[in-house]
Length: 138
Image 1: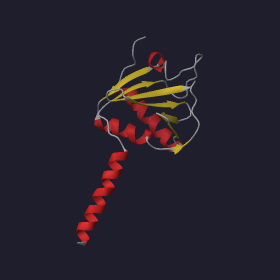
Image 2 (image 1 turned 30 degrees about the horizontal axis):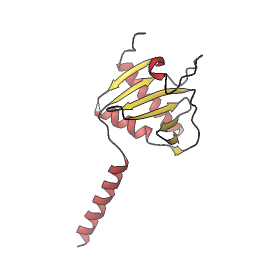
Image 3 (image 1 turned 180 degrees about the vertical axis):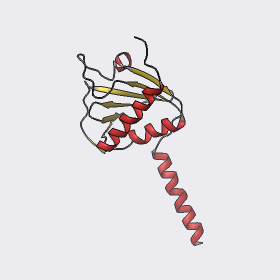
Image 4 (image 1 turned 90 degrees about the vertical axis):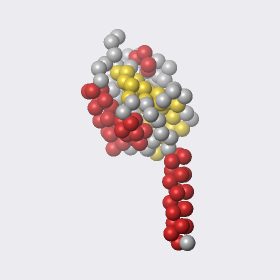
């Protein structure tokens, strides 16, 4: 009885955590390195055209790592609409995540601020992806 109850609780906890964290099989990345300042504002609407790097990620490990990092952070009200540097378009394009120069994340109506460590992890992951892919021709 005790073992059955423990298994049931474990299953319920796993189900709840699985339901809260979506999984995707690919991500399209539109990226301008965070430290770069631009003369023209980069917004959600124009980052696809302005991006220095456009990368299609289908490696499950990289997609999971991106999702884990982006899902972190604390709730915030901050997000600089004129200083967007990263657009992640998940799977079929119905869901997207946007990040500004300071590591503030916008996902639908939810806003989060990545911590210093998370923001550093994101930058390192993106640098690695950029190093393995070629920049688009402009």
